[in-house]
Length: 99
Image (cartoon, rainbow, N blue to C red; front, top):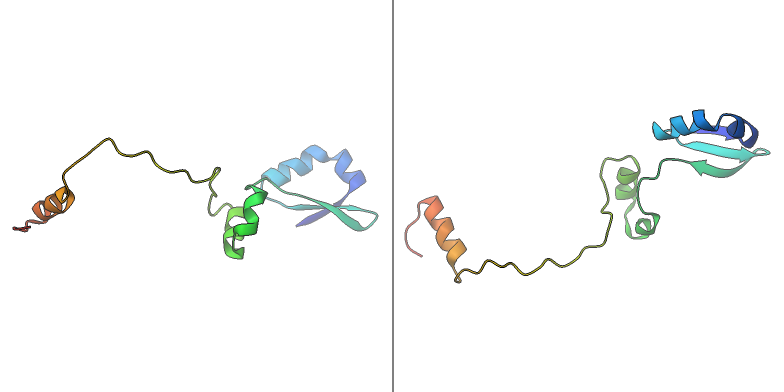
């Protein structure tokens, strides 16, 4: 993590943004007190409350990508087969006889 003063950040903002895009976290200080942290957006902050620590770290490092929206129910399939069809096909595929 890099630390930069407000004055230097203002004069070199483009250079620091390039570093942030490359994954560097930049701590911004004002009169030797940290006031902000710059980093790439990596996931919805509202999700962090429900995440465990390793998952949060993986999301931040882009090892995993968190969903961008809530889960929703799937529509009912338009395909309808008699009960037992999947098992019958599985047995046929495996060369088993009988039901």
